[in-house]
Image 1 (cartoon, rainbow, N blue to C red):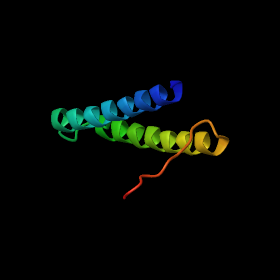
Image 2 (cartoon, rainbow, N blue to C red; image 1 turned 180 degrees about the vertical axis):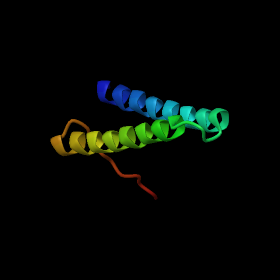
Image 3 (cartoon, rainbow, N blue to C red; image 1 turned 30 degrees about the vertical axis):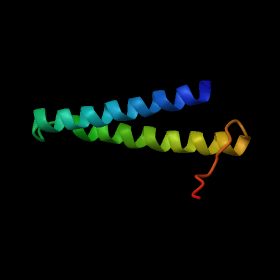
Length: 70
């Protein structure tokens, strides 16, 4: 359960950075680098989340399962 909460928390941080990027895009109108910085953080956190999930699956901390179509 703590792993799922961590994943959801990181996902919320990713969504926050996406929203911050949109806000800075609308407010700054290209005059500052805040939009680029927010979206760069979002990409870095997303890659970190993917690597964290892959490591957890490889170490056996989480069990991936497929979607069964019947």
